[in-house]
Image 1 (tube, rainbow, N blue to C red):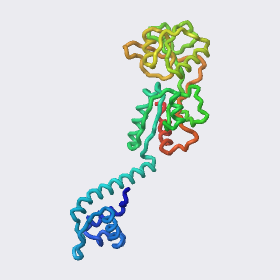
Image 2: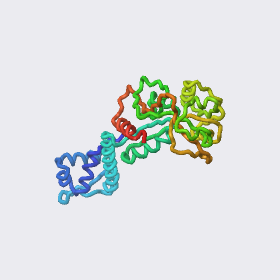
Image 3: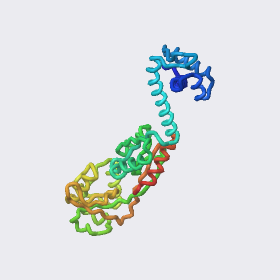
Image 4: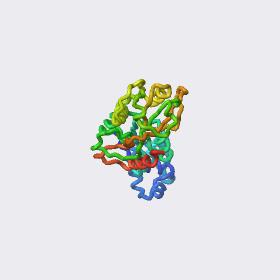
Length: 300
């Protein structure tokens, strides 16, 4: 176990740099006996002779002292950096945030939020995770995540803190060549005889099915996609209509086909975009600052 102290190393370095105990004591604004005792203790602990003592000419580093000085200076520099880092952590300017994001939202928010936040907070490290909704809730409860961005799709969140950031209205996607593609708004009942392109995600699938059933529609499933981009491609290639909540601003799909997005006239409750974290745990100012940042950036 290390027994030497930073103060002993500081006094040793001061004597080495100023050429004597008296000079070092004046520089450090302490008594000469305090400096002398620290040097003696350091030599005893390390088993080294650090100085030649010359009554008329002060002190002179021994070969052992010269070799040890480099290590002592490095140790003091490391201690100063550690102290500075601790102060930045205390000021919430450094630290780590374990941030989860619902996987379908991640392409829209995750990288941008992290990039913009770290531009202004370079010493804060954000560890991102793209997860399914149930995994997000489980990892918040277990403490594996500090914070998560997700949809509130009938979540059981009584034991969590929920910050509502935004609401998104569901809309319909149709092939560009569809007879109703030029409409600005549409009712789901107008598509009751159409085939359906289903997004196969546990919570998303259930959410969209609830919307269809609320309008008395149980369409034939013609195509299933495990990503929203696959769903868009299925629609663009004529397999049927689909529902979505995240607008892209794009009509093209990866395979070169095209879809159109049309607002719904039906009375369907918007989908909340929320941040969640543990309610029964003290949320640090670091997390609070990031929550405030997300609130200012979602949507944008």
